[in-house]
Length: 72
Image (tube, rainbow, N blue to C red; front, side, top):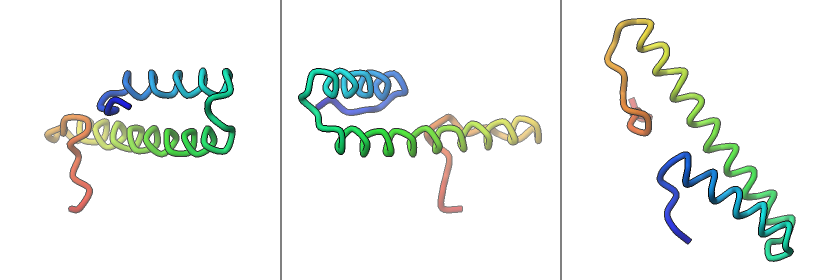
């Protein structure tokens, strides 16, 4: 499996997973776990976008998406 580095990579992986479920090569339980994990990635991205929007509104430096510090 190729690394998932972009939103496009994630969509491609999810579409491949859908196809795998449809053709019977991925079981439903594994598909549910993939869905949960993809949801977590989506929530993380959404949170980062909200922070960026706030930084813009406050006229502060905006971090490049994917580089927001989480330990400060």
